[in-house]
Image (tube, rainbow, N blue to C red):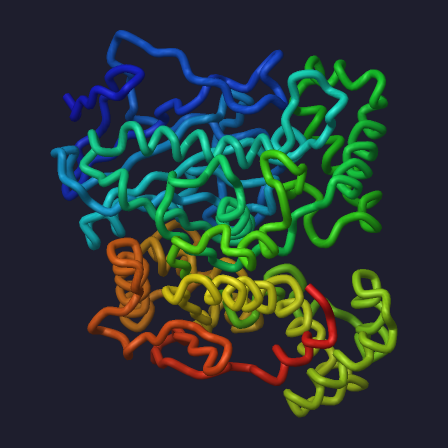
Length: 501
């Protein structure tokens, strides 16, 4: 018999492992099906009998991901469940970390092998919660004409999970007054968005944004154009949108996939994204943070050095030169003169020739990495540090061994170092293995744990970590050798000063 905990909704039975206890598949909201499809999450119904919390729930409906360690198992609209890992459900007051998975707001789930909570929970004497939320059209449709629907349903799911943590985590040995939200990619973007959402206020006390900042939210006009494309793909209009509630979820996912090519002109990397709707999200998160909306929240933020190489490997970029770089970048930055200046900045900073095909590949990859990930992270840190001195920046530079090192320090490579899951399926090939990797994982975990405990990521096994500010731009570089560097790759960063937010 496993440990049994009485939650506010009913008793749950988990699994007692060698060094921790885990509880999987706990509902935190009602199944968002039928009339609740597209609605804000509704309260879950209570239960009397002991709920079996030994297996993961289904993940949100989604297309398949080809990335290692990203299998999500069964899928269902009935997906609003979370998992709790704790050293012991003993009434302790341990720091709580709540993980929001990535996947471009269209894939991912709390059950993925990378997010197994045992290693970090045992190492840090913390409580970890991993959550599901609605994805894609089912989570990020903005259609005010649809009665009962809410913008940002996926974000509101995250808030509902945090409310469950507030009301229940003390029963699992956690401190509801010391909650850190953290996430990577879309999860980092979700974390950055929650900083600006009134419904999330008071539900968390620290935030970690990995490879995701406050730059992907859509305005109402863009969200409306995306909704129109989605509807058209399903043979519907705004006048017949009520029929969406009877469309099979598998059909919705197929329509979502088929729509991507038609959304190139209205999306910037992500079509499913949080929406500045004026109510659940009153303003752009970067503007809100700049105004002090999260002034009481310590923030740890950063990226990997070569994010974009996961999405476009250099060897697959054919015949790329300066003109072709300009054409690609020009799809999202319309000012040709500034695009040219940007390319010249990067070429000079890296001492590379953009007319040379091999150099051009890496210039383009660096521009995309900075445009989508690193520069938005820097801008969010700059905005936040004006109100909160406990703002910290990292740069993960450990290189993936995959494809003979071609991926570099690519997107998502840091996740198993954060969770201590280097032994997860596929990770030895993707993130590496061996004593140096294990040492970096321990030091990275300890930094994240220290931040969750105190709001400061420093610990004795790394150099002194100075808070981020725009003068020095102190950044902890995480690699086989860890060092605090000032203003890394600053010439490239400065190139973006020619653009507004």
